Length: 197
Image (cartoon, rainbow, N blue to C red; front, side):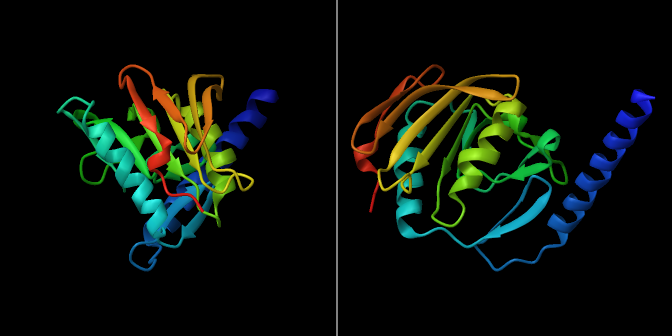
């Protein structure tokens, strides 16, 4: 009896996921908006502000100095986490180029070596909670959360060692301090370069 119930629940989850994907594909959002699926719900976020973009730019410039030539840093790459009914578009995703999806394909988030999310005032909890759990569940090795909206005290938190859908906090610093990204990056991030209100 339990197997039948589990099978029905799985089928309902799969139908919900497929319906969310269809809705996502058909969403016509204004240019620059980020359309994602978070816990089975299609969300639309407005384009990021200048400080957000400056932060992404500073980090991207640093990462390009240490990643292999056959890896890329992507700002609009959709990555799926079906177990969490999620399709996320991280602010930065470092992915080996050979693992990028081909036209019409979707890739699981675990193709990324590093995911970076920069919180916005309107959707910070998605990055702090749902995406944190989703990336851990997918097995993304490193998740860097840059949170200029954290209780009035901007912070950078590096998560790693995913297991059982959870991350271990590897390091947390306030903006202005330095944070080290471990192998395969082995680089120190100076968060003083990130704008903070």
